Length: 86
Picture: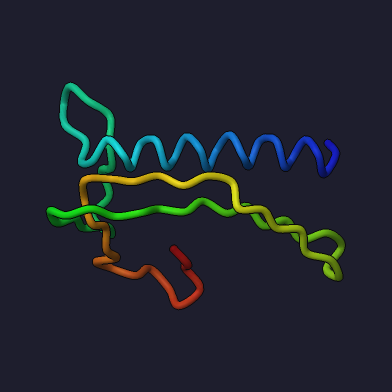
């Protein structure tokens, strides 16, 4: 697998995640966020998706991939560890 392959997969993944977050909270008949660590309130939010790839421990490649506006404001409810970044 090349760095280009990893980049392509990462772009697809972040675009998919932001599309799911735009749908709001999941229910039995629609996709959305179903995670007890993430809360939502009414209001708008702009989500920005970034991909960062570290190569060999000495080089970092980064891209701003996509933006998404949602009808929900998202917030962290329960942080699993100090290393978790949203």
